[in-house]
Length: 254
Image 1 (spheres, rainbow, N blue to C red):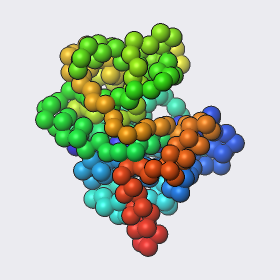
Image 2 (cartoon, helix red, strand yellow; image 1 turned 45 degrees about the vertical axis):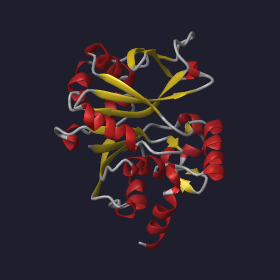
Image 3 (spheres, rainbow, N blue to C red; image 1 turned 30 degrees about the vertical axis):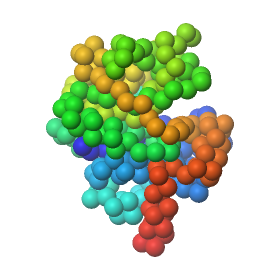
Image 4 (cartoon, rainbow, N blue to C red; image 1 turned 90 degrees about the vertical axis):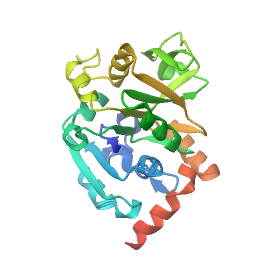
């Protein structure tokens, strides 16, 4: 399985901080935000990763991350998204990189406490299709919300007024190579973007979607409130099983 970190977008909800840099280069406690999703993939045993970025600060990712040696990667790849076309549009840029391999996609502002290795191993045994990670939350109406029937996902609704479960679809997805065929069939939503929820619902309609519940806490870091919340959680309890300390030290000494 190959890894993809989606780190584009304008970060408009974090202006004026993002007037001078990409959102994913901002600090979450004592690490750049981009370190966390990379480490999430590394902890799952993934060593070939592509970062999709954009905007005027794209070159700063190369300055910060180089070839990924500090994370123990075989190689760190980069591609550039022009403009904003939605998560699915950003994902379409990695088709050549993925080839026929499955991919694990992590949104660049997703911070987790634990490890997704068990979910990745479960997906490998699944032999294809898709898997999403879910987390029980107190305010699911802010997120994509799944309707569940045991281990089956019936559908996903984006920011529903009346959520059909207490779960949120967090920004970690696993797909087989068919994901790129699905993306090519999508039409822009009312926001003018290709939506990842439409990708997930296409897999659901095929009967090829499974889900696992994430252990430990999860937060995005796309607003001032969530950025502060995530920073405080990392400071108090650590993230990614606290393996980021090694990456930071290795980067500083390289």
